[in-house]
Image 1 (cartoon, one colour):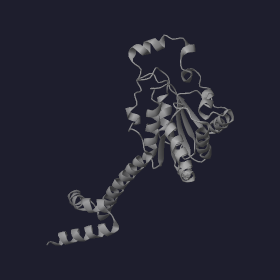
Image 2 (tube, helix red, strand yellow):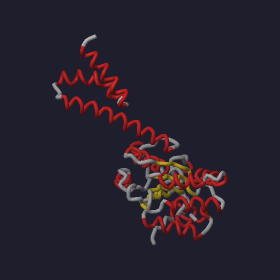
Image 3 (tube, helix red, strand yellow):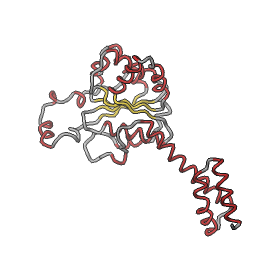
Image 4 (tube, rainbow, N blue to C red):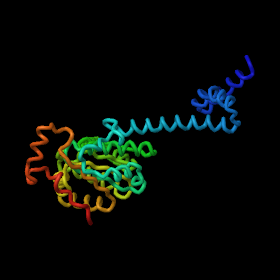
Amino acid sequence: MSTDNVLLAAVRAHTRVLKLPTVARECETLGRQSLAEGWSPLQYLRALLDAELAVRAEHAIGRRMRAARLPVHKTMSQFDWRRPHGLERARVEDLARGAWIPTARNIVILGPVGTGKTHLAIALAIEAIKRGHHVLFYRASDLVRALTEARDARALSRLQERLRRVSLLVVDELGFVPFEKAGGELLFDVLSTRHERCATVITSNLAFSEWNRVFVDDKLTAALLDRLAQHAEVLVTRGPGDRVPAAATKKTDSRSDESKPKATQEVPALTR
């Protein structure tokens, strides 16, 4: 066995102990490249460590993606800006950079069904994951059900703690399914506990004035909106939605304003 082979075997043995699998896999290939291109020993070492870090970062993103429980994979690059969503692209792309997450701000996305609210919420979550944030995604109805089941199983505090600590919580489709008063109170508790601590994304087809239909109690609704007012970016989507057939779209466009869904007309600003 040649000296190089002996050294290569020793390096790979050390990488197993040090748990550096990418260094073990790439050391020979990068070694040949370093000789061919005249790298210094430090350049070679840097290339090995860069490769190890890149693979670890990729694996970490994969773990966070699985933990987030996203229903589908939808990215910012896949969002169809040609449709009349009524959104300012520059503003959305700025939010995708995630500067609002460490400052515990919230994003509320309002609009009719099929106008890209869930797509945007998932895309923002994916961008957050890429930047090292831990994310959890729930449909509002699923979150209320999980909270109710945890309460009944006497495991509510554990779930509440997990929801409190995650960097970004996405609550999708608020208002699609009505809750009982107890469920609304459990959801309110989650959102109010995260206030000024961690970031949240909420999507809804209801205008703010209709959120009392979700939380049942007018005081709970007012208290939640008051908290959101301090730290919220509000995005409002417009249009008939991409799930509406063309014939239905024409019919919808011909209706009077009074007959249109309230979420497309009335989106009062969050003010204190």
